[in-house]
Amino acid sequence: MTKDAVIRAAYQAAGWALAPLAPVLLKRRLAKGRELPDRWREKLGHATLPRPKGRLVWLHAVGLGETMALRGLIKALAQQAPDLEFLITSGTRGSAEVIARDMPPNARHQFLPLDSPPFLHRFLHHWQPDLAIWSEQDIWPGAFFATQAHGIPQALVNARMAARSYEGRARLGSLYRAAFACLRVIDAQDPTTAHYLSKLGAQGVSVSGSLKPAAPPLGTDPAELSKLKAALAGRRVWVAASSHAGDEAEALAALEATSDSLLIIAPRFLNRADAIAADLHARNLPFARRSADEVPSPETRVWLADTLGEMGLWYRLADWALVGGGFDAIGGHNPWEAVNLGCPVLHGPDTANFATDYAALEAIGAARQVAPGTLASALPAPSEAAEMAAKAKALVQDAQQKVQTLAARLLALMEAQSCR
Image 1: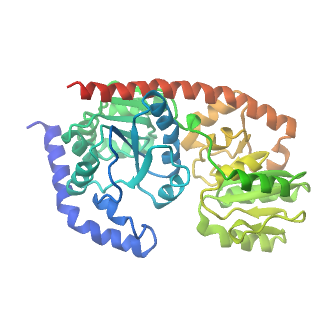
Image 2: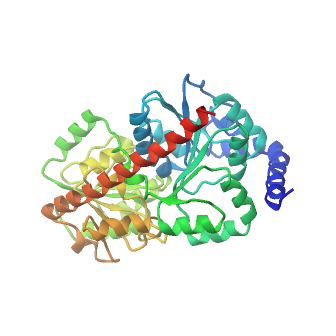
C-alpha cells in the first residue's frame, strides 16, 4: 500500500470513529441557534427533499458569499444544458437562508454532511449526482474520497488559497495529494492559488479568474424598490455594505462631515445591530431601522439595514457603496455584488481576501481605495460615480465569457462519464 493510500485509509477510519459524536455536537449548535431546527439532520446525510428526475449537478460552497457566487456558473450550465437540475450545498445557516430568497431555476439547497463516511454515503446514495463541483476554499478530503467511490466525476472551481491556508495544509501534504487526485478539473481564481495547489499535489491546474463577477445581480422586490425610490427621491444615498466597526466609524465620520446624504448601514453580522443603534444614539444622529419597518424621513441621516438578504435592494438604492472589511484587518469583502448592480465601490486598505478582484477594478478606475480618515473627500460626485460604474462593465462581460468556457469543460466531464 502506498503512503497516500495509507493516509487516505487513516483519514476515513478517523471519520468513522468520530461519527457517533456528530449528533451531540450538532444538538449543541442547535441549542445555540447555529443550526436550523428542521434541517440540522441534513448534516448527518438525511435528505429533507426528494431527488429530482434527470441529470443532477451538485455544487458546494462553504458560506454566503461563496454560495451566491455559484449562481453565475449555474446559469451558464443551464444555458448550455437546459435539462439539468441543480443541488447546492453549503455549511452555514446564513447561506441557506439567503440563497433560498435568490434560488436559481431548477435548484434546491441542502447542508453538506459532516466529513465522515456514514453521513457522506447516505447523502450520495439519496442524491446520486451526475457531477460534483467544489468551490473556493472548502476542501474536504473525506467527501472527495466518498464521491469518487460512487463513481461521480468531480471538479474544483473558483479555487482560492492564501499563504496561511497553504502552510496549514502542507503539513498534511499526502492527504491533500490523495484528495486532489480525485478531481478531473481544477480551476483557480489566480496564479498564486494555482501555485499553492500544484505544490500540494494538484495536477493540471488552470486559471479562469473569480466566479463572483459573473454572478447574476442580486434580486429584490420591484414594488418595494419603487416605493423606496419614491420616498428617497432627491437625496444622495450611499451604503456601508457588509460593514464592521471600523468601516462604520469611517462612514459615520464622513457622514458627519457632509450634510446632504443618507447613509445605509448594512452590517455583516446582524447581531451587532443594537450596538450600532446605541452608537447612533450617542452621536445624536437621527436614524431609522429596517427591522422595525421604518422608512427614512427627510431628517433621517442613517438607515440601519438590520435585515437579512436585502443587499440587492440596498445596492439599487445607493449611488455608491463602501464595501466593508477594509478597515478592520478582515481582508475585505466581495465588491462584485455592488458592481453588478451599477453601484461604484469604495473600500479600505485591507483587501487581502479579494486582492486580485480589487486590483483589477482599480486598474481601470472602477473602484477606489480610501485611506483612514479620508472618506469624506473621496466620496464620488454623480458624474464620477457613473463613470466608475461604466468602466466595470467590461470586466463583468469578460468574466461571463470565461464562465461559459468553464461550464463547457464541466459538462464535458459529465458527458464523458455517461459514455463509459
